[in-house]
Length: 145
Image (cartoon, rainbow, N blue to C red; front, side, top):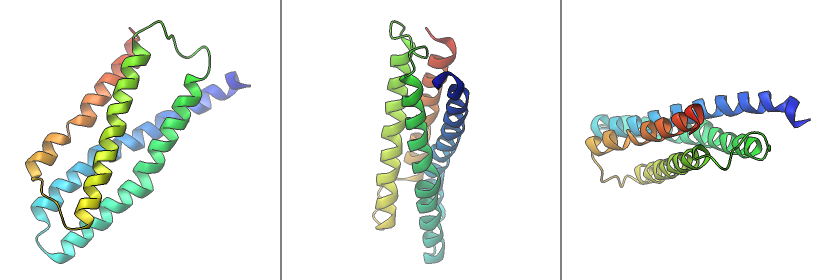
């Protein structure tokens, strides 16, 4: 039964990861614009709505689906080679992505309370974190060292 469901679970996993990554790339960019262009109360409120909806409607569900489908595939005995390095490096990248997601959620709550203290430059630098995690994960899964 799992053998026939595997391609569907994998396809759903890939779609969820793409959606999650899109959010992880875009939310910090919204923070940059919020800091640098949020000069009027109307713009600030617009950024708050955009940030909230991106996190709650796209990123959170995508992360949950990515985790559930990933764990489901990991439970299939033919998917992982626990004697190889790649499952562990992928897991480290995944923990990094999840940490970054949580960090973004905390920063969004700080923006919601009008308490941001970081600069646009600092958000630009943090925007590189999901790229690094993606590189680790993709190389781990494709090269399978």
